[in-house]
Image (cartoon, rainbow, N blue to C red; front, top):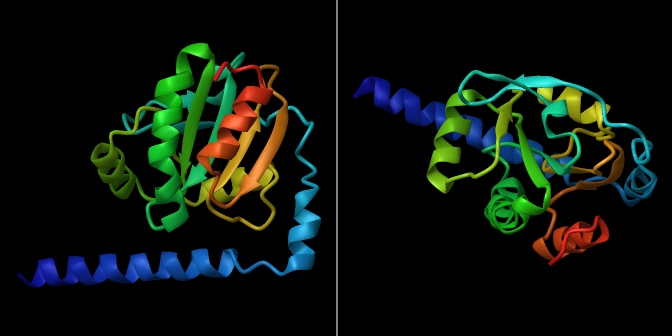
Length: 183
C-alpha cells in the first residue's frame, strides 16, 4: 500500500512538472516567435541520428529515406502532443502507402511511452530519446526546446518545414498535398 501511494505521488509530481514546463515553453514572447518563424534548419539536409524503438532496436533516420517524413518530438506529459497523436495515427493509416511516414521521437522515459503507445494503438514508430531528444530537436531547428515539435522532411531528405506546437490535421493535409501526396 505504501509503495502504491509513493508511486501515485511520483506520477502526480512528474505530470505536474511536465505540464508546468510545457506551459512555460508555450509562453514565448511575440518578438521571439517572429524570430523563430525563420527557422535556419529549413532547406538543410536532415541531420542523421539513431535512437532505440520500444523493442530496443536501434533505428536510423536513413531507414525512411525517399519518404515524406513527419518527425514528431513529443512526450506523454505534453497535452498538445497527446491531442495531435490520434490525428497522426489516422494520417499514417490513410497516406502511408503513398510514401508518407511519421516517426515519433519521445522525450520521455520508456515505460511511460510504452504504456501510452499501447493505449492509443500508435501505428508508426516512436523512438525513445529521453532527454537526448531535446538536443536532437535543437539539431532540427528547435532552439527553444518546445513540444510538440514537428519537422517535415521531403523525399530528398531536406527539411522543408517545421512546427512548434500542435500541428492540426488540416495543416498536415495541406503539407502532404504540397509534397505530392494525393488526398
